[in-house]
Each structure stands twice: as C-alpha cells, then as structure tokens.
Length: 253
Image 1 (cartoon, helix red, strand yellow):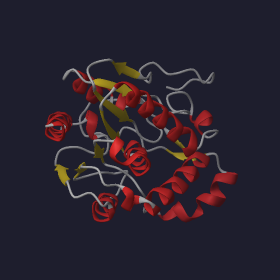
Image 2 (cartoon, one colour; image 1 turned 90 degrees about the vertical axis):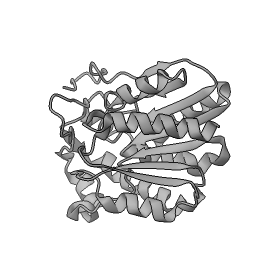
Image 3 (cartoon, helix red, strand yellow; image 1 turned 90 degrees about the horizontal axis):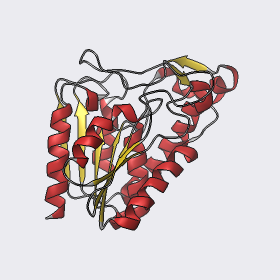
Image 4 (cartoon, rainbow, N blue to C red; image 1 turned 120 degrees about the vertical axis):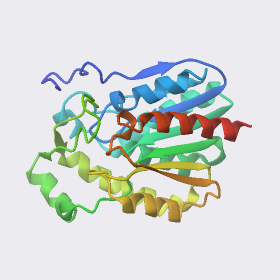
C-alpha cells in the first residue's frame, strides 16, 4: 500500500521500451498506476514498437499527495511523454484506460494529425454519481471518499491503486472532463474503443457520448463481455492486446 513518505509504491513505477519508428503512449487511470496497463504496454513492445507507460503525478505514492495535484499536472506528464515519442518516431499512437482515456482524448484534441490513432478502454468524460454535484463543496471539507480500485473480475489481479478517492483531485478531474467535452469534435483520428459490459466505475453513457461526438470517421467499438473496469488486467486483456495491435497495423498500412 502507499506509504507515508510519498515514495513510489513497488509495482507503480513507470515502464518504457525502445523499439522502431512506431511510438505508443499508454496511460493509466485516476488513482491507479502503471501496473494497470504495464502488461498491455509490454505486449505492444513485443511488436518491436517504442512504448512509454508513464506514472502520472500524484499516483503510485499516497492519496494525500494526489490531493495536491490537478488535471494540469497529469496532462503535463502525458504531453511530455507524447512529445518525447514524437521526436523519435514517425508515427505515434495514444492509448488509455479510464482517465488515461480522458487524457488520450485531450491529446487527440490538441495534436490532430500528429497522432495516428487512439485506443480507449472504458474511458471517462463524466460521472453519474449522485454526489458529483457536491464535489465543489465536499472537496473543501472532506479529504477523501472510499475508493474505486481493483474493479477486476479476474482473481489475483492488482492495479496498485489507492483505496480512497482524493476529493480535491476528483474535483479537478471533473473540470478536466468539461474541457474535453467542449472540444471533443476536434477528435478526428481513428478510434478503437473497448467497453466492458459490466463496469462498476464508469457508466456506459461515457462511451456513448464519445462515439457520438467525435468527428472521426474511422470508429470501432468493442464490448468486453467478461471484464470489469480495469479490463487491461481482466479476462479480456488478451482481446485488448490482440485488437489494439491489429488496429495499429491497419493504420500503418
């Protein structure tokens, strides 16, 4: 579990691999860590591609530290990693789980054709939680709520996430979602979206909103029948790997 010193928890470290001219950025979710998407990134690197799996600021340490970060910090790290890949790769794809999908959408809005395609796994652009309207006030008086970690059907998996939701960070995330939704028509890249049939964190309306508001003409949705929210560690992880690899190969040809 996260420790009081704020040092990175074992398993939450960033991961990278250098390969050929194809770059892949893989982004983890809110309160999670690179552990949730590392196997996905490793499988992509097995194709000979250059892969970056960064640890977003405030993640993989303590939820208290995360409460001192904002969406601008998380996006800045995603942006830095993307630009690093862009400097050395002729084609760059961005992929993300949950809030990692949110960050992926924002990068797509900002960089246009510099991103060859995006892959989203249970992405979020809003929440239907009844307490969401109270976040502006709650985040001032309550530091955290019970967490949403390890929503995984497959036994024995651990995304190395917090057991609490830091409310100041959650309030910042809600502001980020509004920004993404305001510009979502700027997303024109090919899109592959995976959605779990049963997700206890992100509601199905998120995928529906994204698919109906992006301007992309090359759009494909896949429903994952046997996985919960952290599908990248769940029963359908091999489907995500297989079809995201096929997606990249198709776009490159």
